[in-house]
Image (tube, rainbow, N blue to C red; front, side, top):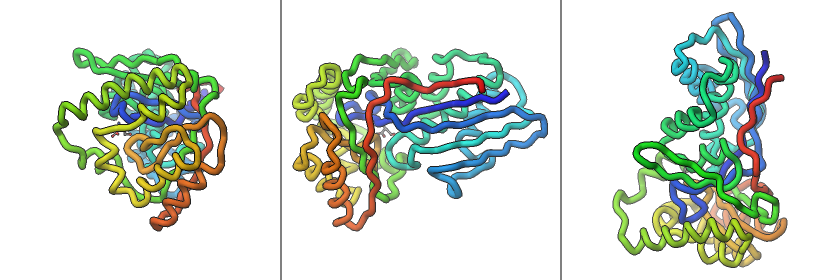
Length: 304
Ligand code: HSE
C-alpha cells in the first residue's frame, strides 16, 4: 500500500496574533509512504532540504511517524519515504510543522487510521509547542487557536483571502534565524499596553481577512510583542517592510518567527517582492520571492 500525504506551507502570527493565528498557503510538500518488512527506514528527498536534511531516524518526518507507531503500540517493520519538498526549510513558512504532520499522517494512514484528525492535530501541537503553524497546515485557511483547560481548540475562520482575493508575496532572505533563537530573545513579561495593542489588532486582522478589507488589514497588522525584538536582528528587514508598503503592499509582517516577510496586496504585483528583495540585497542578503495565495485546503491523505 502506498500513501500520499500533502501538507501546505503556513504563515503564523499574522502580525499581532502571536502564537494564535495562522494561514495556510498554496505551496505544498508531497510525501509518499510505503510500509516494508525489511526493518529499514529509507528516506529520500527531492527539492528543499535535499542533501542537507538527515535521511535517517533523525529526519523529523521519520521521528514523527515513529511517534504515531509508538502511540498505537505497533512496531514499525520498515518504511520507504520519498519527499518532494517545496516549503523552504527554516524560512518562517512552517516547514517543521509540515514535516511533523506529514510523518504523523503518513504513519496513521499506514496503520489503518487508528487516530482521528483531532488526535493527530493534538499530538502535533503538543510536540511543536505552539499551534499557529500546525493547525492551519491541518485545517487549511485562516485558523485561530486557544489553549483551554490544557486542550487546544483550533477553529477555521471565514476568510475572503481563502478565495484568492488577497495576494501574498513572501520574501525569504538567506539568513539563519532558527525559531528556537527567535523565541529565546523575546521578553518573558509584557506590559499591559502592549497586550492591549495586540489583542485589539488580532481581532481586527481576522475581521479584515474575513471581509477582504486591505485598508483595515494595513492598520491592524502591526505588533508589539515579537516583531520589535526580531526585526532588528534580521539585516534589512525593517527597510524591506517599509519598501513593501511604498511599493503598494497594504500590510506586511514577519512570517512566523522569520526570517521571511509576508506582504498582502489586492493583486499580484511583482514590484512588491522586488522592492523587498532589493532592501535585503543592500543589507548583504540574497533572497527568494514567492508569489502565493491562501490555501483553503489543509493536509490531504490519499491511498495510491
Ligand atoms: N508563533 C511562533 C513564533 C511561530 O512566532 O515563535 C514560529 O513558527
